[in-house]
Length: 181
Image 1: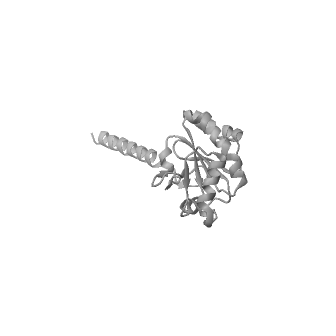
Image 2: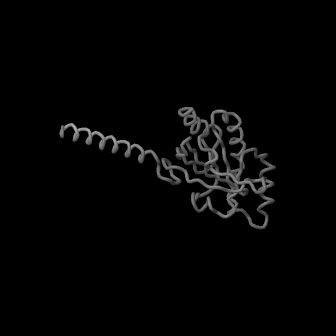
Image 3: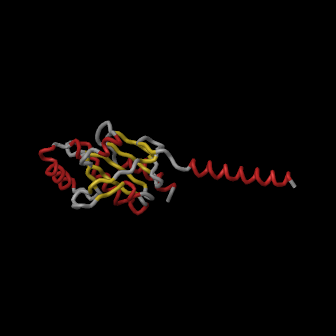
């Protein structure tokens, strides 16, 4: 009888340990590098007074997170590719989310500069404004543009420093969308 109780207790303890290890191992640590869970943030939405948006609003989608500034020629050059990619593949659960690094814009004309950029490029993507430098302090981009490709569990799969084009987006983001679609 004692052997049976010891066996049952051992089995219960082992099962509990296995469940504990599985449950605690599932959550990735937060960070801004490949393989880490992207740090959430909430910022004002461009053109929508009093409205805020968050990275976590798009959890469950493959997120292409792009940081840009109005004075950055490659940022302007890549924006049409982001918009076309969103239009072509958004139905696969892909979302391009852009963040203007307001913190780095010219203070005297920032609103006008952003308005001109948005109109000139005809930006149709959700755009958040990093007015206080919160995202800058967290993500610390070494330059612009900077793009993160984040999977449906909000884990960073790719970090692209510099300009990205449509073909690169297809190569880097589509496999992530299709493997979890």
